[in-house]
Length: 154
Image (cartoon, rainbow, N blue to C red; front, side):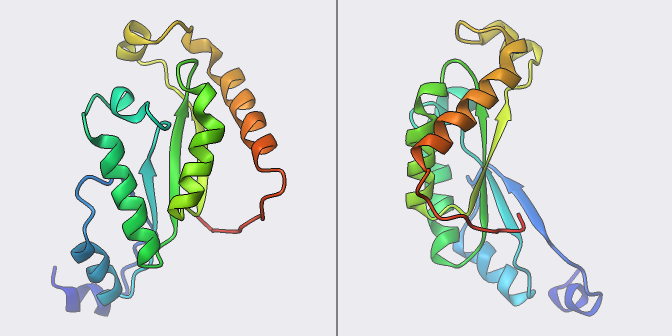
């Protein structure tokens, strides 16, 4: 499908989920050309923990670069952060870091107990996921009690 056909058909791109690795200026320029302003959802599992969680060296830097690029270009972003016993202590720092990058909002997600996670999980039972999310949100909220609330539609 050509760009012209995309516009003529009134196709809408509302959300894009990515790890940020291949997100480039050219992609954002294309979105503008298509009159698209999606909320860009990027995985980010904690300062100093993202590479380990994703199993990819450099994944944290890729996500950081993508968040900055989106912010510089005025695109809304949502950080999707999996929480577990191994990263819960850095959640407040992570939220501050994401805010400094210009991230619009953050979603705290329990780590899904897939077999690989159960095998490799750091000293924690996967069934603790919901209580970890509740604790992470509490820690994050205490850290940002004076913060402004932002509506994002992400």
